[in-house]
Image (tube, rainbow, N blue to C red; front, side, top):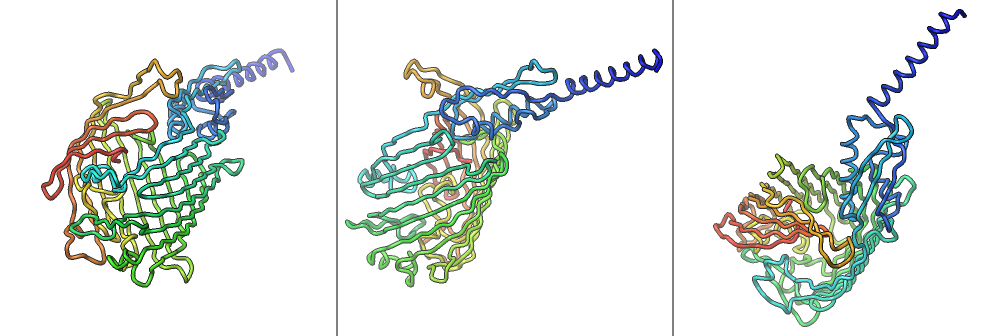
Length: 465
């Protein structure tokens, strides 16, 4: 090979090499070392599971910031950290970057005094003002048990309503961290219960002895193939014992032929979570879809199918204006339902604002909510002088002013003559002030007007949507 041919071959090799390096450094980089900080309790594998990249992955330069931002949101959606910071810097190896992940861990072990109200919500209890309907006890809440995201809850409740509850959940059983499992056991008894709905309100019966005894045992398996989707399969056993005095007041409470009903239940739940944060989302969307078969064996008290859909969406228009909306619906196949399983609107999060004092029973319902919000105080941080730990002295807060419109409807198979809210579209509107702070705490103060023309001031302690 002559000198010219050698020079030409060497030039081609150099050009090819430089072109490869240029393409790599200008279009993509390789993730080098991932360094974690601040995780004194949380295992490294728990944090790495939520990142949308691993060491050795190739990332497009134009997408690095988005990938880091999504990974930060994934970590914040775990109930583990107050703050998360993810940054990157160039590595000594050409075409590589190193990534630093710094977290601020929460306090994971709580022993709460339990003071629970027997009413459906704070507003109903406050209107009645009956301090004797208070239950007390202790609640041990151990989050991030052993640093593995495991959950251990133990509750002992005495007084008006008594309960013993144990919940254990292990989120990761296999090396790929896609399978988890858990168990829930609950035993309770009540001296008072809502035994019938009259004039669209829950009517309570109170006795010196316990009216209801319940036992609940659930085991579940979760499959989480990626960051955003979770599949849960659950097998549940439930039994209830009601006193004769309660069944005399309302034979439909359990249905006459089922004085001590017990049944097995098999359910499937799909969750898709693309929210920017868990407690008070401002961007993204969330879906729950469940299917339940109540009654597996021939000896089970009840046999029916039910399905429920929950969809929530959030949008940020600019730095100060936000929109949130939700739609919830439930359908059941059984026509003649026992009273204690026919709760529809007015329970937990399923209610039309403005109707907090009312309940609507039935098999099927839909519920829609829309919120417009303005950030009076965007997320900020207050540093306290005491206590001397970042788990408590660094307090985040934000304040939002909003307006809302709700609507919903229940269509039962059996109507009670003295109830007027079944088969009617319920409407509510109003304005509210939301305060968001530490450990996913939300306080909502709202003024609402319902479709009956009634107005009122209400307090709630979780996000409306």
